[in-house]
Image (tube, rainbow, N blue to C red):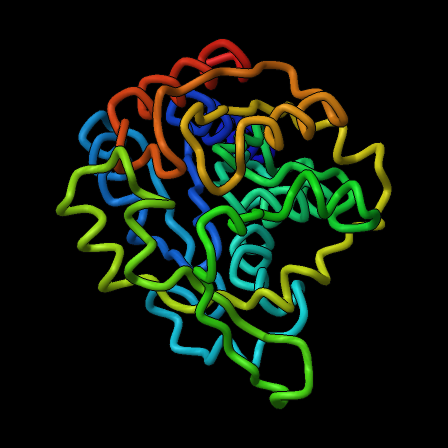
Length: 274
């Protein structure tokens, strides 16, 4: 009986290794819907894909103005990781502010993550602890003027609790190389993101565990949000094992889906032993 159980476990582990499970995490204001092209490409190729809606995003109906801590915002991903079988390891992919979600997961669930991939993402080992972290990891859109629509869930005299790029600026800033239909879809689905919660992202767990997870960074060369120089600064401060480049805007899942899909499969094959 014991031998049968051991054999069964081995078969499960082998199956998991041969069929990577991708877990895709959106950025601020987005949702699982951002990944629809990548999810379709992956599933049509036989891969397992899970797309997470963080709290107050996508189909989660929580009011973002009520979300004031990063732990609360990122709870859907943490719950997902906690529920995974101990025999399963996933490929965790984060876009933009979703990089913070990925990093927190690597601190807490290193043994369940085969590879962490940052796509035009905030990659800070400890979150926002210093002024340099803020300079490198927070978008500066001041060159475009007054672009933010802010929410003040704690009162007008308190710091804003939410923010999103105004509709008239979204295509110019976030989707300038993406198909018109995708930026139109995004304009319908984007929601205010809990900016105050993101600012509280700080990870003080054991740093040794997070270093056990292989990291890949995918740079976006025409990015108006997380600018190339910011991406480069984060790469230099916390070097990943590989860096790749996409000729895309901030949203390669729209502007370069086939290239992003191919690159994700390539980095998994070369980095995770598939």
